[in-house]
Length: 398
Image (cartoon, rainbow, N blue to C red):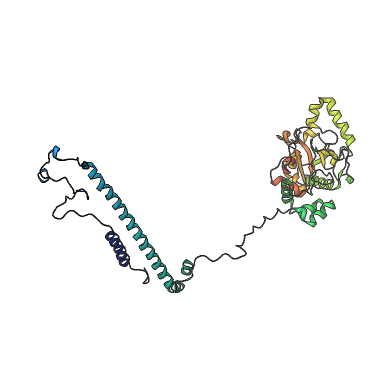
């Protein structure tokens, strides 16, 4: 309570005075003098019927003349004063309520005046107490005419894509696959960008690139496409005149020399590039031997063969002479290739247990060149098919 607040005794005295005046304004019937009223006797009910001996002598009926009006019954005499009493009590309560309202209004006016008078002092005390006290007295700051500032949320940055890199796109246009992969951040980064779909400028259908994917669901376009940089691998025994694209041919030469230097033995090859027409003949020969279903498990139809890309080669083990394709799996050359081919940019394309994905039975002799950067990412990631490597659908059938 501040010194300016009205003291409580003053309020109480005002209320008592108002009640006293209201009570004094109401006339209350008092009992007759000399008659003592019971504590439980209702006011207005003290006019009891006088005793019989105080009524005077009884006048005979024949001397009465006109009979006077009968006196009210005892019940009527009792109900009349009771009704008056209820009205009296109601008037008294209304008067007290009115006086109380006046008192409350007067107190409110006094408190408001005291608060206004002491406002300056209260503000001074609040300022002395600190900014928090000032805020509690003065209330929140007013809203500016231009309104409250609206926060803005910055848009999440788009995922980085190699397609926004001029160096990368220039390498793509120049068909320099090694430079493009380097500009993308390496083989794993390139693979992640392509597999996630954030590098739409990279086409896995373009056979001019070493990352092209060809399977039973992904034919060449045009179907008889032919590479224009075919060369014979240098220093590699070939069982037939079958060339490869220049980058793949150089990589095969390096692989064969490394295997021989490691003591694994000589590696030769049976077949590399096969044109659309040549593949038609090869597939037809398979169908003639075992039927279409058997041919489709071990040979591609024309326009769907990896050999047409110039990036695939079927190797054989050689000593004084060369063995067959089936001999490579159990040979020292085959074991060395499984462990080290990725170091030279090759992968074993069709492995055991993946026929439902690649569409072909295991071929330990079928190597596919994808370049050293991608081959390392393929090996490090534990992939077994190009479909899984680039997050493509399985292609078990045409």
